[in-house]
Amino acid sequence: MEIKRGAVRNEGPADPEYFTGEVYMSNLSKHEAPGRTGVLSVRFSPGGRTNWHTHPYGQTLVVTDGNGWVQKDGDAKQEIAPGDVVVIPAGVRHWHGATDTSQMTHIAIGERDEIGTAHWEEAVSDADYLG
Image 1 (cartoon, one colour):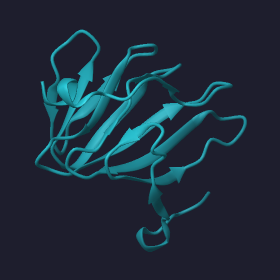
Image 2 (image 1 turned 90 degrees about the vertical axis):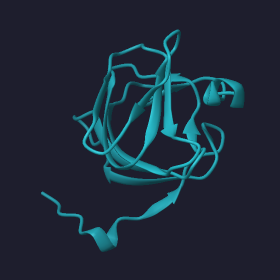
Image 3 (image 1 turned 30 degrees about the vertical axis):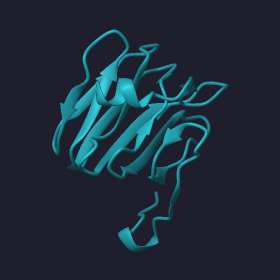
Image 4 (image 1 turned 120 degrees about the horizontal axis):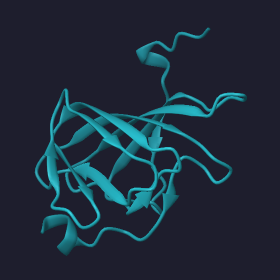
């Protein structure tokens, strides 16, 4: 068992290959065999967002601060706020991030396969993000 106190969590910038804008991540729980589940805290500055992507086993997001948007490919984007829980089924193409005027932080829970927890695709264009 491990307790990670708030002061000792390391936050670092997210990989710009998979994110647009200022995005920071903190690994709260690593994937350790035989388990496949990992937990991240992700903080998006206004305008920050993921690329389009899917998850092999789905993903759950718990919004803890600020306001954001999430969009399933083919659907309109939806606003998310503190206390909201977003359950994304396996294989569903989507993106998520902060709105253009607010930061947003969420906890992301997912399971990895041999590639990882996310299968990354192209960046979300500004037109799609703001549309």
